[in-house]
Length: 176
Image (cartoon, rainbow, N blue to C red; front, top):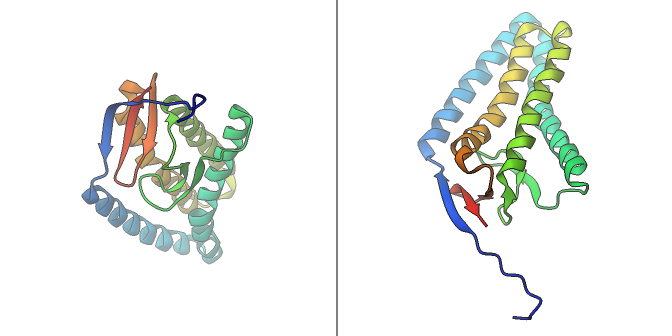
């Protein structure tokens, strides 16, 4: 090693393991809600059903991704290279990469901002949306964020000094 190398040591504070039964139940509830929303939206109006479901499934994750990128760019003052798109629960969507440590306070703040900003944006669209489509969009938004918020809640004790590391089978909180 050279003299200019920096060595970081992290101490594990808490680890949250991903339980497969949780994800199975989560997906079953999601399929039931998706089918119910499709039937309810199509019942109210055919155009809303044809347009609303794809908008909810594709549009909400894109809005969350854009908001996270915007918040990271304005808070950190540069584009986030360590964040990427993830297709696995609980970090489905735009999330910190598996090869980096990120301050738990930053993750908590970003996700609570995204939670409230999207809810406010959907609230602004409420007068023009059928009630079933409005409910479906809110459900999709909360469905994407709920597993992340549960992990953040479980790690709340260490949020002031903890660093989050996301692995394939767990999320861990470390202290430097």
